[in-house]
Length: 256
Image 1 (cartoon, rainbow, N blue to C red):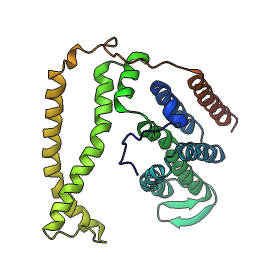
Image 2: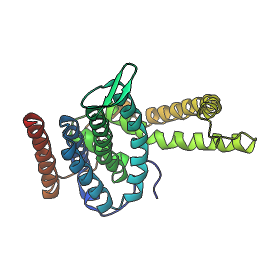
Image 3: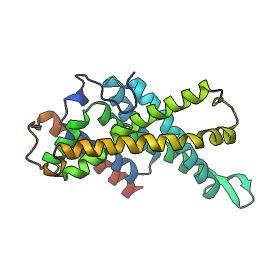
């Protein structure tokens, strides 16, 4: 199983697509999910995303991602349940009620976030960071410093996660118990670990900035890349499918 957001080599359909096309398709897919609030349509989009992930061999990675997104979306769902009195009342609250419409809205948020997140994360599993940066600069005309900043941020996420894991293991060896069931106590134990993590992240960021400066970061332009990223028939077909999904989402939203 690959680490979080770590490139996985392969010959799947997603691996063969142009990096810029992958990004554009993932964004169009996500926009389609947010344009429409029809639960049936969102479930279809989620099924398509899961099918793509399993078909490309990223089933286990997607399962881990879905757990993380579900945990985050569940918080939003609870907020919606408690603050959106809509539909037939089911549970009465001091400040309102939880109705059938509240449940539908909460479920819609969970399904929407999961469906929109999967293609975006699959892009990073099926594409090298350098290819994403170079393709975005050459074909999407994104300024290099912005593309480099974005991909560097994504690259540092697993690095910082590994640092935090190492710090927690060191504290565990000293007798600190992080596997407590008390959520408040666990937060109190985790907060002090942010200081060494911050120091480590600043050092890594500073080293990366110096390395980029030495290699002529400010001299990089759109013509500096030596690798070409041709767009083939498969890329055009993927774009047409995603555009069609976006059009369908708009039509469903308008007719609803």
